[in-house]
Length: 126
Image (cartoon, rainbow, N blue to C red; front, side, top):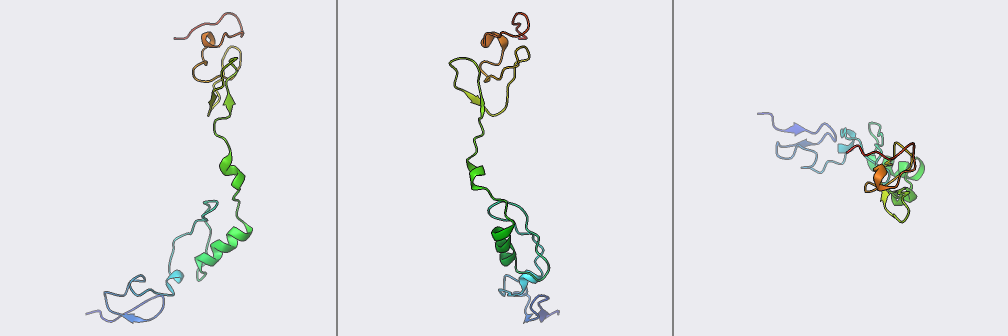
């Protein structure tokens, strides 16, 4: 029988049902915890040295080193406006015409769909 068991973090003695850190609410569990905390603002991993309390280290990171930019949350994804006159659609990625070099929406991406004024006459690849 291996009872009683000694906690390797706090040094207290427990039975097999309470030897886990969570089961006896070990106050020294952070010394043995190998998880890397993540900043809740910038989602960057915050390195914690052995023996440091992760909450304090993450708090210090948020006060000094955090790269969180609230304006970044409001940046627009759909920024590529269609150049076809009268079209107000915007796309996430650029859709560039090979003939005239203009940026268009998915609907007007083909030369025949945007009255292309590029090199020669518009040809359809369809």
